[in-house]
Length: 245
Length: 245
DNA sequence: CTACGCACGATCGGATCCAATCGCAAGACG
DNA sequence: CGTCTTGCGATTGGATCCGATCGTGCGTAG
Image (cartoon, chains in turn blue, green, yellow, red):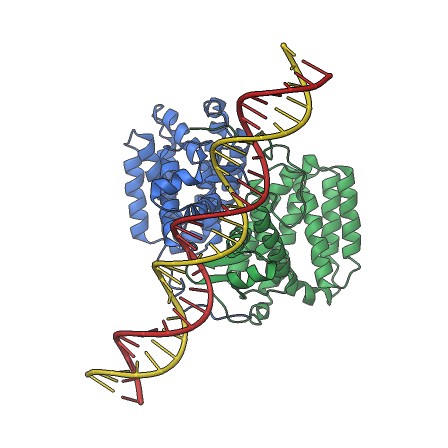
């Protein structure tokens, strides 16, 4: 009844994996390849929220049949990037303002927990790299560039935690808020505000000193401030094309 | 590029859905049927954690091909009940003591948030039903019965919230801790402790009075106490058969 | 002119068949 | 005698074909 797990199983985890993709290799090779391609297209904005995703079209595009496309869509749905409806189709996930605030509240309650679990595992090398990223972020003007650096920065701050499920939840939240952060960053970068960069530096310092309470406060405030600022820009949710609710 | 969503879409949500299954109808009919059957088998303990799930076997069992079985496994993996490994197989999810404590910490941080969002939507009828459930729980001796009532009780307490993703996260946590709560409940019911029932009554009273802060405290304490008690029973994690890590 | 109904087309879910992958064990070589 | 290699079997992943479902548009009746 309870068969042995194969020896070559992912017991030897390959590492923290700060990339965007989930670490799990639960589906076949073709499914993963298609999922990675689609994920890149979605996160880059090439496939905006609300876009219809036709299985046959993707299959032809990637030179495969529709079967691995279904697998890819399953992966992306678990990532929170795609919404599936039976006998109807798949769309790039699109959320209302209320849902986005929900995601930010979840982040506000969950990411401090992850950060606290990560703190003991953070090495000086990681913190140095975070400093570099914070510096680079402070001098870029392109939103997409900023966002990639920002994601790597925070992923690094969580890379000390060996927890899996908590990481998955946070990744999902980041994925689901990606587009809105992208739009928001564009209007934000023009303001030349230094609050975000100050917070980043404060975070690294708190982590370097091992001050978990201070680090908690910084991330919580960081996320909360973003949520409140986002709430002040409801126009970001108007420009989206009509799509599934 | 951004096609219209079909008219008959799940815009008209059928209700709070306190059942175990996720509300989404993202896969086909056969996939859902198989997923529901497998989920029942897993939650009942018929398929204990670590059990190998062979696609062909399930397909024959449900009189279908392996394709909908794959869909069902995807659903159950999203539910946190099954673990998939490419080119290897599927197993009923099985977690270490450390992972379980992780889940309880997540619950501790997330469920108060959900409860707070739910409070304004709770009707007197719901609260009366919760009282009945609390009463019935206090007088049952069967662990499985208690667990089903307990799950319905807490699901009801969250049914006032219209949030979707938060519900999914909590459902996942409940699924992933299900077996350990089952084992734990068995040793717990023999102690005839009244703490749990008192907490349940306190929760209903706080909700009835609209006291969000008090309700927060009760659930947080409820979950935290369970986590600490579970940590005192490491033997519950020894009886599990060898399986995937 | 409007509203209901039916039929068609597009797209997705499922069945069947074939290929790829991995674990395991038997055998050969040092 | 131990270890590496290689071949086989079991099981999963993918391709192709077929059936089911739903949206849409036209036609007709009121």
